[in-house]
Length: 93
Image (cartoon, rainbow, N blue to C red; front, top):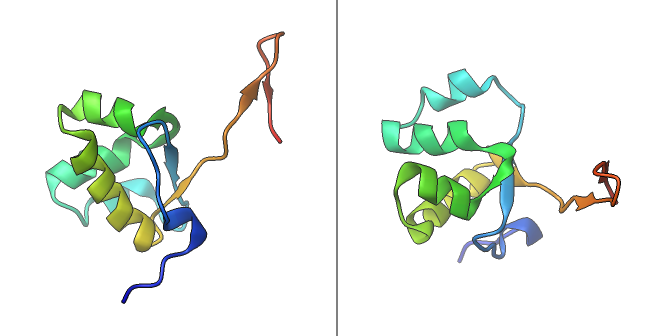
């Protein structure tokens, strides 16, 4: 049975991911088929799973499945939620 780290236990359509800068994104993206490459390149730390699904015209489940593989391999990480203050500036916890 596969052991999952806490951040891999589950995520929803509103979860935001970013790539981990262990190697340049372009070099990493070349390792994947075009369908997966699109997803990886769209992960900017601001787009949700739902946003990526809409932009790629794929289902949220399909996107989540691909993101789960990326997450298990250590290519991406979830972004902590960011609060927006009343003055429009971002406040990080």
